[in-house]
Structure formats: structure tokens, C-alpha cells
Image (cartoon, rainbow, N blue to C red; front, side, top):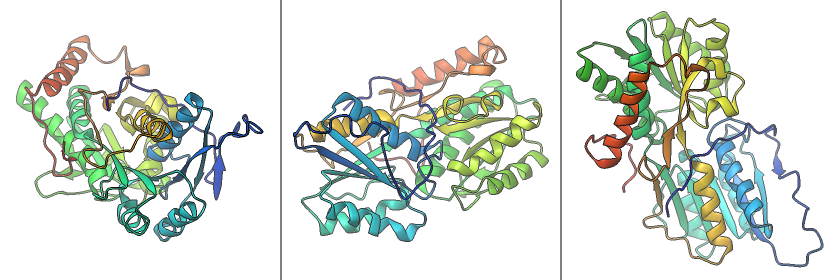
Length: 355
């Protein structure tokens, strides 16, 4: 499976209700055809996290738009204890395809899928290595490497920062790529830009321990700004909105790099977002659901791994910063993409999915 296009996701104005479905979900009522049901369980960030839950839901919406015989719905997890009952609920409802969103759901999904071997599951940002779970993973370290190089080139203080929601592979993979991109800039340019908030060698750094609380994101980024960082990349779902909002309010004192979904399409804080490390979850989810609805057996091995080469990951347009990023720096960032895709530059992370 190859991802064919880079997406721009619109922010969804859906609340994290107990259950939700597409506004036009009944547009084929009375058709009499057996519907293919695709049912999604969100992680604790909720459907409107402007991040990976939002992205996965968009993928389901796009699959439904492409095949109106597909019915879609979701249930929002309020806590990790909700994962198993939410997944089980959809097994009992005989959903044709059950999508778990987020690496935190890996163990719960593995347990429920193992107990229900004839049920087709999919998971975003995880790979439990079970035959009936189709894994969709993303080598975001590659695009984050570009973003780190860009941030180093844009920094005026000589300090940039990153922080995460939790120290789990789908988070730390961004942070590894980002700090390595900064290091590559320093090596190439003979500079000494510091990357605060993450040490790749020790795998220790700054975390909110939450993916929803914006005040926690602001608290962590305030500390990085106090240390001199003028560009910050939060990898913390909805918590990161606390950083982008504060950066916007700072009047240019510092800026941000967003992750997962183009921040200029999904947040109100575009003026403070230089670019986004995009994880093309919508296209991966859309293609998986369309294949499953078409009767194709989704193979757990190899599953799908998004890279710069197959546009499963990318950096978003510079939007409001387009005129502020020097042409030379833009060209260097583009060259890095080509070099990574060609294998001339190798990006490594302990959290990288197996190819």
C-alpha cells in the first residue's frame, strides 16, 4: 500500500461525546444494502484533539465519502480503563472493522483481538503483531529531522525545544528525529544550536504526562522558553494546544512546530506555527477501510509504515511563515527530504517501526 497524497485536515468541530457519527450518516437510509461498519475507539485525547484521533476520524469520513455503503461511528475513551470495554462493545455490535487509535491502546487491542480471532481490527501507532490487527505506523523521525533542521535554522536565540505527552514510542520518535535534525544543522553549518527538552542518548526529557490538559502543555513549554527556547515542538496531542496558544499570545517571542495534523488547518494558532510534522493517518485509515469493505484481507505483516518516500509522513507548508523562512533554508530542508528518501541520510530512532 502506498500513500499517494499529502493531506490537509480540517479541524473537526465535534465534541468528545460518549459516541459520535458523521453528520450525514443516514444519507443512504432505506437503500436496503448490507452496510460495512467501521467503528473507531479514540484514545483519551478525544475526537477533537486536533491530532491523531482527529486524523483517524477524518480517514473514516473520507472512506465513507468514497464508498457510501460504509457506516462509521466512534466512541471516545475518557480513561485507559475504557479501552477494553469500548473495543468489546464494538465486537458485540458486530462491527466489520474496529479501529483503535494510539499506541496506548496496543495491549488492550491485542487482548480483545486475540480473544476474537475472526474480528478485523486496525490500530494507529501500534503493532501488537496479531494476525487480525492491521497496524498503521509512521516513521515520523524522518519528517521531524527536517523540522529540527528548520527550527535550528530559524532560531534567533540558538535554543529550540521539544516535549512529549508520555515517553512512549509514537511520541519519542518525533523527539529523536527533531534533536537529530538540530544536530545535523550544527554539523553542516558549524553552529551550536541547543535542543532542550529531550536527550536522545538517555531517552529522558520533558513530558506533560497527559494528552488533553492544555495548562500542562503550557507549563512545560513555559519552562523551555524560560531556558531560552524560541521554537518549541510539542508532541502531546491536545496538551500541545496550550503551547501554541501561548506562543500566539507572545506576539512573536517564540514559535512552534505542530505534529500529526497541519496545525494551520486544525488549530486556531496558525500565526505561531512554522510548520507541522504531518503523519498521514487519514489516507492510511481510508485505504485500509476501503480495502476491508471491498473484501480484501488486511495483512498484519507487513502492515503499513509511512515514510517520506511514500508520503506517509511529511512537513506541512510554512503558511504564515512562508515569507519568513529564507529561500536557502527552504532548499536545504527540501534536499534533506530527498536525501532521506534516497537513503543518503539515515535517520534512526529506537522507536522506529520495523520496515
